[in-house]
Image (tube, rainbow, N blue to C red; front, top):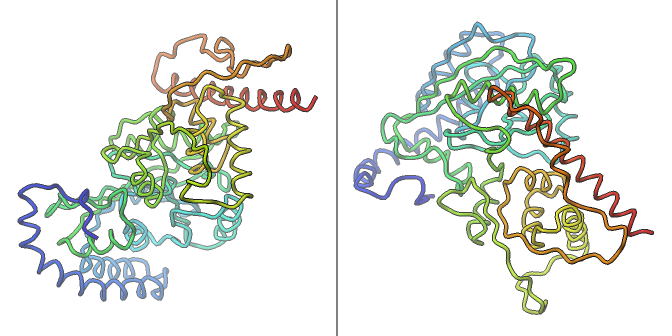
Amino acid sequence: MASPSRFPNDIRLIFLLLYGPIGLVLLILRLAVYLQLQLAAHFIPCYYGSIRRFILQSISAVCGMLVHCSGRHQLSSNNKVIVSNHVSVMDATVLNTTLQVNRSYSKDYYPSREEFLKACKSKTELSQPILLFPERTISDGKSLLEFCDWIFETEHSVQPIVIKATRPFLGYVRLTTRTSNRWEDLLWHFFVPYTFYDIRILPVLSKDANESNDKAIFRLRKEISEALNLRSDPIVSEQSSLSASQIKKQADDGVINSDNPQTEVVQPVTPQKDSSKSPKTTTPTRDTRLAKMVQQVQDVFPQVPYDVIQKDLAITKNVDDTIAKILDGRIKYTPVTPPKKTENNEISTSPNRSLFSSKNFGRSSSERLTSLLDRREALIERARKNYRENLESKSK
């Protein structure tokens, strides 16, 4: 529970130890009150409006959640999807008590895109809007993580909301860490005196008729980042959307740097020739599938080491995502010399940069980023075409 990265290792720990007995009493009492909060939010009808909000926010204050909401005039009653950044384990509870949202599908993980879209389509028939966290995991509040790409596949307009969470007293106790789980964050939330949530409702953002999903998500991410006063590049500097368990496992294996866990640094490892010394064995089906995916990526990028591709595919489980990360420069590796091909009909796997380079340098940052997005899509399509050509040449 006491993760060393949750609080600084200095003299302030003395004040935390002195506060410990009081925090434990608050923790026990608030666990019981929190159960009543969940029951009240479930059984009090939504049509009571202000009465329901007053009761729930009063119970939330006892649980240590003080909420301030601005921009209620921007809230659209016809909108069915609410999109928000994710800064703490209590975000869904705070938004539910303040705005009356349906949080059945606000969890970080969805088994598949098809299952989520099916569930989202059925939930849009309800009176309450659906709450979505496009980052799919809790961030540190200092940057936005990569948004998922299925936001605009069900609705053409969303209601963006930004959340800021601070702790005026014992503020050095962080809301979350990269290796913590939800229960740990929840217990620390009840342990500290209180947490202040500042909610700001932004105007409804609609997708244009001829606009792609990627560009609409880019505009949405830009609106939220500007409202949070965050400077981040949605393409080049987008953060990894790894879950806490994945990051913890990779930190233990030395795959990522624990001091900067949001930057993925994969070190090439020499493959073991003696399989009998391997400590772990996986099923042949999984190994075969992963090997085929690695080969697909390596056919496009032969200069990327095999182990680097394998480790990233173990996380993304998607060839296109790994190719996109290599194109974006989010995977660091030491290039290797690919074996020379003796065939006369050798197909070049490196895309012609002159075909995808921008002819004009954008005057504004938004123009340059939009141009980068178009070139990124062209590079991915070129990589897919190269892979298909390689398959055809091998089958001949």
